[in-house]
Image 1 (cartoon, helix red, strand yellow):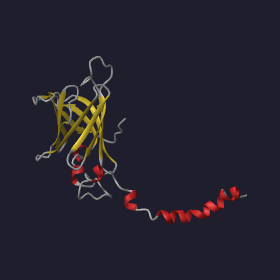
Image 2 (cartoon, rainbow, N blue to C red):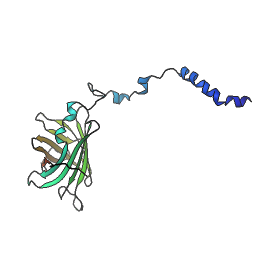
Image 3 (tube, rainbow, N blue to C red):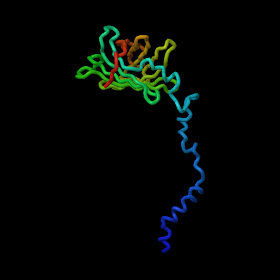
Image 4 (cartoon, rainbow, N blue to C red):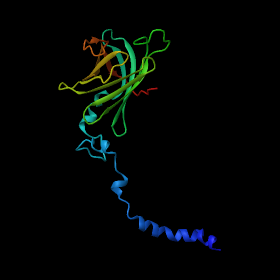
Length: 205
C-alpha cells in the first residue's frame, strides 16, 4: 500500500541526514548567546573559568570561620556565627544564632537567628540578611581605604536604614552597627559585635 510506505520508519530514518544538511550548520556562538542586557554588563578582565578568583572577591576572607560573638560594651557572649565561602569563593554565607534576648522581638519566645548572603558584583558588595523574627535587610557598599568594609541599606526596611562596618583585627573582627529613620541620615549606634574565633573544631548547626 502507498500509505503504508509513506509511514515506513525506515524511510524517515534514511531522510534524517538529508534534513540536517538542509538546515545548515548550527552556530555554536548563537546557541550559547546571552541576553544583551546581561552580556553587556560582564565585568572586563574577569577570567570566565575562575570568575571569583580576583582580590575583590576575597575582601571578606577575614570574616570566614566559626566565631563566638560578644557585646562590645559588656563583653557578654550573645551569639555564635559561622561564615563560609561557596561556589568557588563567589558567595559569602553567614549563619548566625543568638543565645539570649539580644535583638529578640518583644513577645517572641525564642532567640534571634538568621543568615546572610554576600556577593561582590564587580563594582560593589551586595548583602541580603534574613532572620526568623524581624524580616530582611538589603545592603550595599565597598571596602574603605582603612581596610574596613562598609555596607549601607540599598532600600529602607520597616522605615529605617541600616549601616554595618566590618573591621578586621589581629585577634578577630569587630562589626559596628547603626540605624536611622529612612532617609534622615541621623545615625544611632547599636551594640558593637566583637568576634573571637571559637577554640578547637566546631560544627555550626
